[in-house]
Length: 153
Image 1 (tube, rainbow, N blue to C red):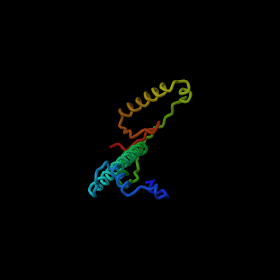
Image 2 (image 1 turned 60 degrees about the vertical axis):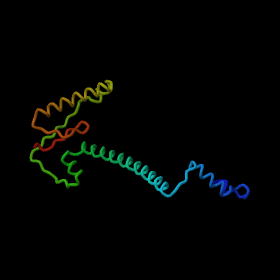
Image 3 (image 1 turned 90 degrees about the vertical axis):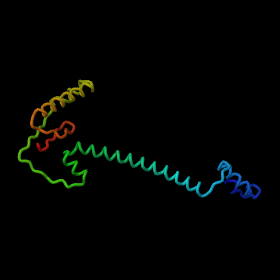
Image 4 (image 1 turned 90 degrees about the horizontal axis):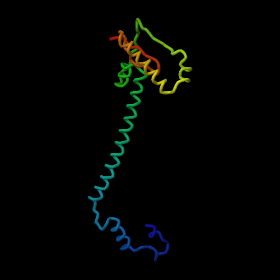
């Protein structure tokens, strides 16, 4: 194509030379409108597959965000929001909240290896879960080191 732009006429290819060049691009095959349509459909299909892949990845990211919101909200609230329902405020006559602190945790953490701290916390939360499981208590979530209650059913 660059040769066609040459200013000197003797440097420009003839129409026969251009035609022969195009034949080599098509590997000697004659092309017709059907072949062109198939090529266009193949391109469209490929682009569509790429678009589907991108949208699937975006959907997966949104699902992960929804799962993270389950950690921040009560399950019933999160489910209502997912289905587009309005969440009505609720009142409770009797509620017990439990707050705790590991006294000296910063000092303990500084003196231990990270895996020891992880093991300590894992054992502690396993113990909390066992205690909660033996009472008429429903543990919805624990946020970091917090447990959130929900109405007993």
